[in-house]
Amino acid sequence: MSRRCPGVVNPDPPGLRVPSMSRRGFLETGIGALAACALPSCDSWPEEIEAPDRLLTARPGDPTIAPTVGLSALNLGTTRDGVLYVPESYSADTAAPLFVALHGAGGQGSDWASYYARAESRGMIFLAPDSRGSTWDLIRGQVGPDVRFLNRALLHTFERCRIDPERIALAGFSDGASYALSLGASNGGLFGSLVAYSPGFLDLVPPLNGKPRLFVSHGNEDPVLSVRVTRDSIVPELRRLGYEVTYREFDGGHNVPAEISEEALDWFLA
Image (cartoon, rainbow, N blue to C red; front, side, top):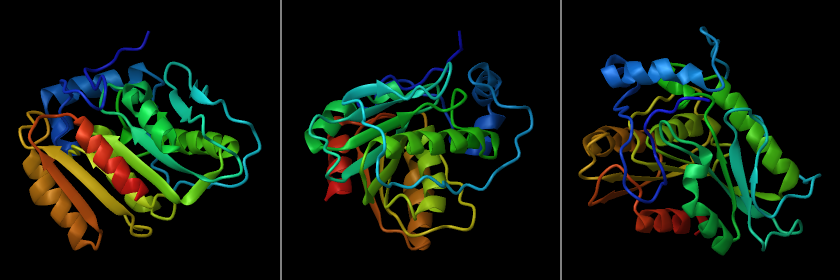
């Protein structure tokens, strides 16, 4: 049985999360060291990872497999996998929006359970893969297994669902938010929108492709990842680089309030 670091139970209610104030800071703290030791306990990474290009190659096209309506497992991983939700209103004749969500440290795709009903009510496809380890590989300093698995999860979705290429979002919470921003900036040709709930760091590597619009939120009493990093560093840097950023600071801690989730989805689909 794989070990899990303390992590998100659900993106909406509050809860305790693993700190990752910055990639370097995370690994230099005692908690970061413990988490790093726990990472290989799942679908393990090799000791040395050759960092691949961050560019995802999967693209939407004509589906060839009928999707399972409702919730289904991806069946792409072993101890860690992910989920796909297809609303009952889905029709192969109509291209649907796709919302891809990345969990926080110690979490898994099913932590986004509150988003199934949101996807249903909006006629939106919802994809939530699991990281290969207890959190996303960028925390180790370079990408690799998670990029490859995300690409497989996207191919799995595109084979089954007709997706509107103009309405694909990459989102995440906490470590997942940092990953969504960092990876999404390299894949603006695929993701037109990025959603970051309480990110901890930003790691941009050229080339940056396209200019996806961004929605960023953070609680002003977050005890895990300081709102000051998002407010004073991440958001200003993204704006300096020319990104259109919608920033929402709310009264609360390290969580995603329901009203923030609703606003982010309305913003994405507007």
